[in-house]
Image 1 (cartoon, rainbow, N blue to C red):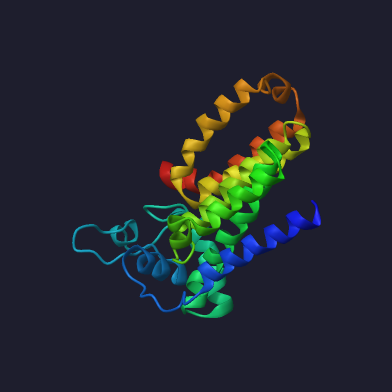
Image 2: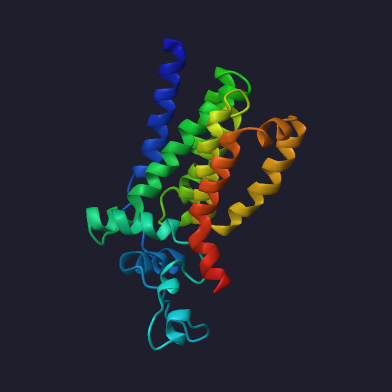
Length: 233
């Protein structure tokens, strides 16, 4: 990276920081953000609703397997949020700081992916567009899953690209793919997409002969195993 490119990247990150941190504590905590926050604080699957109960309300004694997931989402986001609540307290900083950091990480990752696929200029332009994109700024300022999910999905894609030349990176690809599914089930769409790209790049046969593919696949299933056990039960 040249000095000029580094300056542009730092300016883009500064814009991203300003738009995501500015007055982020002033907006109210309502709807899904409040529901996710309450369950993250206590890691208890309960959502007060006159229309829908949660599985914890169906039993007299909560079995161990009911702690492996929430009824509507896997545990990844809740565990991350719980950790930040423990550090910063039950407040806006505990609720939203890691979401902002994930949003900023996405800016850097989209730069890395852009320059990996094309060139430095494309990476910088991609990062700039994402830094000011209204929906990404918005989702990076609220305690919802999407900002964290996007960052982890981009990590999986970045290591997916690196694995084309160094197959050892398949380990990291499968780790972040598993974590994507551990954050939100909508990441399931990644599996057929990665499969199609793998076929188009003619990598599947060589990967099937590589030990890192199987080690990575094993780690992937270990990461998502709590959700699998919960849903089977």
